[in-house]
Length: 402
Image 1 (cartoon, one colour):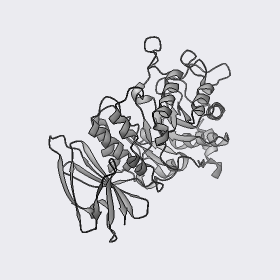
Image 2: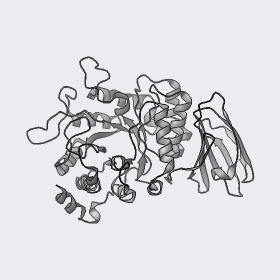
Image 3: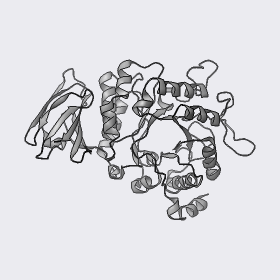
């Protein structure tokens, strides 16, 4: 198998991912964090991994304004499969939970004006124990294309992570050969970061987005841990971010159980600053209006979707305050975020020279709050910000050059 993969990787320029997709971070919905691997449709029919769940979420994405806000992918995660391939060796969905089949589900989602994503694993099995794509690269890539898949998430269980540098490009090769352009989401560096240095330039060449770190959990501790890890930028992965290639800190858990409203705003803000994919994993049938408003906030989404595609970076961390800054259009403008990670009962009073946030032009800047659209003021490089940020909260600013 490794010799075959190595041969494929020597095929030349045609091997590279060149699909013209994901020119801004993908936006959509994914089942995993909220619904996990719930296959008990007998006792929990409304929440199990089934065609009905994905149809319902597609309906809500359209009817509740998420599609208009930019969310377009409806993505299945693990546990959709039958435990065995069919007699011809083809992947097949669980017949009880997906009686209409994957093609019919994809058609339903396409008819809503949305796009359809699916999950698999680069190894012999998915993390949930279902058939993986190893030894079936060409066949499975073609099957995804035949089903009308628009987005492929490929996990990294049940394979030696040392094989990733050849296996992920090889599967991407066969995706390209189908002639159908599918966004390619890799878990390539996520399984390497703890014991080897991921080759980020190569990953960015072969994948549209990639998971860098561990799975997000429904808690502020998990969100904060991810933000801290991304802020360290080990391996300089921020340098390879740009149109068609995105670092993925995992799903948005806004609207679930574990975050306060301030913490939900903080996650949304920091994912915007990181130019991260905005992939919701929440029950859109039962979501608080405040959470829905955060997910659909036009000012924050505009930062995330900025065409330059530059990932924000940490300027400094001191006294439980992190300052992040990223360049945005028009050229010379910046987005900046003061994240207060402290848990005390008193908001943090921030007085800071604006040059720290990247406001260095003598032309000056009009600054607004991204969440509210409120005009904060006109600032020159000699000025200071005077802001209050709530515990585990954020101030997200947009500074447009004057």
